Length: 421
Ligand SMILES: *Cc1c(COP(=O)(O)O)cnc(C)c1O
Image (cartoon, rainbow, N blue to C red; front, side, top):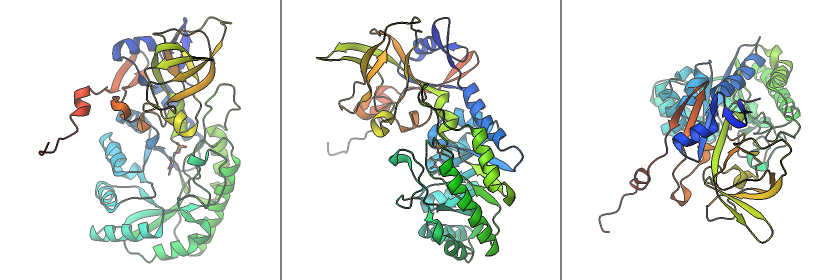
């Protein structure tokens, strides 16, 4: 459920007409709904009622500080995967003891930054990383709290580019080697083992892979405790999928996911962390774009938009589907025709949809890409020297630009010309 609905024939974000935002900030832009972000975060938080837990929003999904602040205000922690994200979380007011550091290639500088600024835990992904973190912590005269990310060799049954829990993936250490790795970690004075971490992929539409992974984590918890490790915290990653189409079978709900966690791991008395990104932000955001031209090809009609693959790369990168709807509500029963919906970038991959059935669309019309809140703005680039598009946050009747569109000067003045030119 989200808060982007038609009202009196026009699409609204909460109580603000999309067309009003478009008139104010120009197109294309991203718009997020505070009520939807709040609702999704609370679903997770409430799903874990009854067990000690912290929901650490995976901020790589949508990392604008206004979004972070909204979620942090509800009690969210943050899952960060880079020094830049760590700095953003801190800038948004998130205390270090609510920040979890994930990622397969943390640098020593990033470790230093987080150990100095405060950190809840590092999710360590390899033995070389463990050695480096041990050294950095000792240099700083401190001890780094860690979990080790285990790879449970479970098929997440999702798109290959976002599956992370099979043995062929680069993430974590094989679960079969976990006891050896924990034994080694326990000998390193710069580290304190506090738990186990697992994350098997993104956009999972079934619970079964989670069940398989969490059962393995439960067994490992008991083995590691028997080996003398103090396993107090289980970080179970993110990955619960969202419905990208209205027609599809809906993925499992956070309540069902929470029940599964309690069922598989509740008896262990551990603090549970989860790291949802997509489900918190995905359906809380739209990308709004304007039709520049309606062009008739030999055998098809093209809708050429002012938004492009550099603004929303998911269709080009993952063959992802986004529902695309007109901002003016179509008449009930309006005839639909197929369109190829494309951007202006010089690549054939700059195609959002082929043969998409839409009611008649005209030059100048606004369209909205649904489910664009996660892995949208954060993956944008300035390819073709197109400015990063603005982000807008709606809260009831109010809206605010939370990242403005840079001017051409701001973009091109980041280049420096060597003196020999
Ligand atoms: C990407 C990622 C997440 C979030 O995944 P979603 O599918 O967006 O919920 C959580 N944890 C880790 C370690 C990740 O890399």
